[in-house]
Length: 116
Image 1 (cartoon, one colour):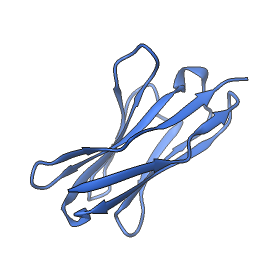
Image 2 (cartoon, one colour):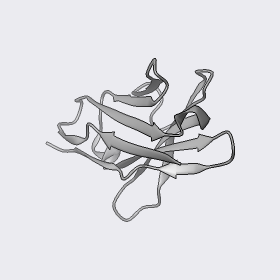
Image 3 (cartoon, one colour):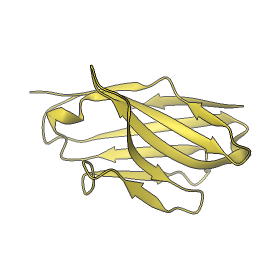
Image 4 (cartoon, one colour):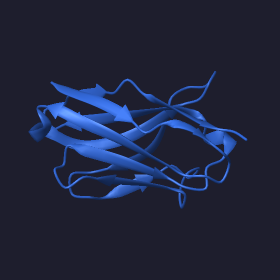
């Protein structure tokens, strides 16, 4: 089992920045891929970015160049640095991990609101 807790969300003006964090606990040695997803009001949850255990990253086209995913040195943390935020980035952001034995775990989400 892996438990995930996100933090760092909040209200920010357009063009501003936020840094989201996700802390994993439990069977963290089984973690393989870590990712961020988001869900805007009235919309389906969508993938934002992924980072593998080897450090390879991938991004949705809508966030390329503005959002950056990274992992902590202890490998139980994943971050999402969000710059040049737009109102359309408003959503609940979720952390997700995949484990080497096929497990999939989600955090509870953190709200990001981009508004003037």
